[in-house]
Amino acid sequence: MDVDAGHGAALGGALPTPGESPLTRRLRSLLTWPAADGDPVTTLVRAHRGIHPSADASVLRRAYTIAENMHRGQFRKSGEPYITHPFAVAQICADLGMDTTTLVAALLHDTVEDTRYTLQALQEDFGREVAHLVDGVTKFDKAFYGKAAEAETVRKMIVAAGKDVRVLIIKLADRLHNMRTLGVRSAASRERIARKTLEVLVPLCDRLGIQTLKRDLDDVVLLHLQPEEHARIARFVHDRPGWDAYLADVVSRTRVALRRNRVDAEVSPRPRHLYSIWKDTVAGDHATPYDLPRIAIVVDGPATDCYAALGAVHGLWRPVPGRFKDFIASPKNNLYRSLHTSVCGPQDRTVEVLIRTTEMHRSAEYGVAAHYRFPRAAGRAADRADELAWLRRVLDWEQDTVDPTQFMASLRCDLAEAQIQVVADGRQVVLPAGATPVDLAYELGTERGDHCLAARINGRLAPLSSELEEGDVVEIFTESDAESGFEAAAAPRGPRREWLGFVKSPHAQMQINRWFADHTEPGISIADKVRLGRASVGLALRTYNRGLASDLPLLRLSEELGYPDLETLLVAVFDRTVEPDAVVRQLIDLVDHRK
Ligand code: MN
Image 1: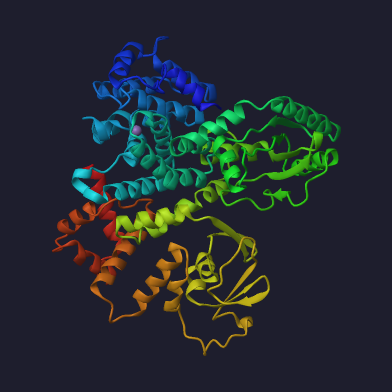
Image 2: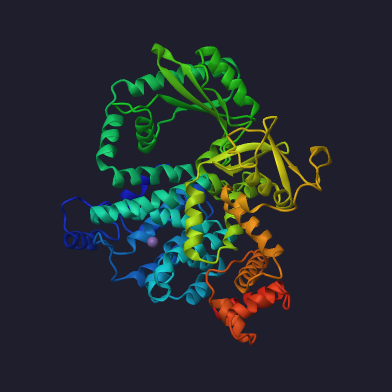
């Protein structure tokens, strides 16, 4: 897929020509939009039907017409009519292979925020699903929420994504197009936006496994943060004499070897994107851009064929020691699966080789979007649940974080964190880098965390504060482990306060705090009761797949139920004077009928 070429052409030159004033551009675009070759929706429908042949085009036309009408008279900073933006976002979603509902929501994604079109009208015209998606990417009003607006907006988006992950896909496409059209802004604002993208949206995209979108985001971030470096790498990639011929030779010899070994597979060159070359160049301190020739082998059969292909490649060229990685047996934490090896190829040049099945290739390229792009490929429900494990974890601690700025800080921290995988209870567990056995214990379950006493790392007893490393095999011992050999009576029950000093994950931190709050009665403060009451409401909401973007609905409910203020209601929940479930049912009622 080539997103770039696709919509650049469709927009009749959406990427502004340098040196042209916004006014000139506005005048020019009024002449060229809609595109000279007729109706822009046709382009979109064509892209969409290329992947989903029986898709309904009429709803796309209807959405486009409304969006175009509502945004009429509005212009982008670049001078183009505003509709070019939602159109480009829908085009990115179409190229990604998303379904019609996503495309409709993408076309309308800015209407509620920026025009007189209301969420109510949107829901009446296009249904609840589209309304939910648009609401998920609609920003909170700065005038009303003040400084907290930005953090609250991200929180709302994450909660909405918990119900429907397509919210995040539209947001990523929206940011990609905004980043591509940053050219007209000042250097300072370009850098600020690019940095935010790098901090939150790029890692988000990575967690969702959508590599095809992440490559585009990476490159456009590099373009804005390091324009000279971007140009240098682009120049290097553009003129490399003999590079293509060399790769073609490697590909054809590999094909022959595979055929001889009766492995059915597609072999192709696998170019690295600019950002990835730049990163390796900087990391290795190379004076000139560093990039090795790379090919991908996508086998047509089961996973075992990957190993047969590996054997064929290693039989052809000597493997470079220490470079083989089996991400099929141990998938990376965003569930990436492949075999990686490097071989000493023709002319003694090192060649990198990726080997995977068709299904692995699809999920490596499209991540959560793969289920929409290939709806008939039986995506196992368990796989989908695994893909969203990260999101569910974030939603867990989201419930307990009252302050939106604190939520944002935890999210940023979680996203910035490199992750490691350790083995416990015979399975792989993903933890933030720098995590300790206590983090692991809580990840395995609240009980295990609260009562953990000691840990064995790779067979040796280790302090609970030890930093775990990638691949460690860890055993957690609790008070109830008879074989642990620890005197249960001698050890105090429950977590220790000092754990708060070294645990790494927001989840463990939250659980430890909760334990102390639960166990320090009767001295428990009102503030704690309020916090815990709110957490109970949050957890109950989760069972309905709902979340709270702000306190407003709760505030209204407390009024309606006759409480003097919100705090009193939350304390009542803590004391179980009212059941959290009852509160939540009334809350949902209230929200759904007022919207
Ligand atoms: Mn937008």
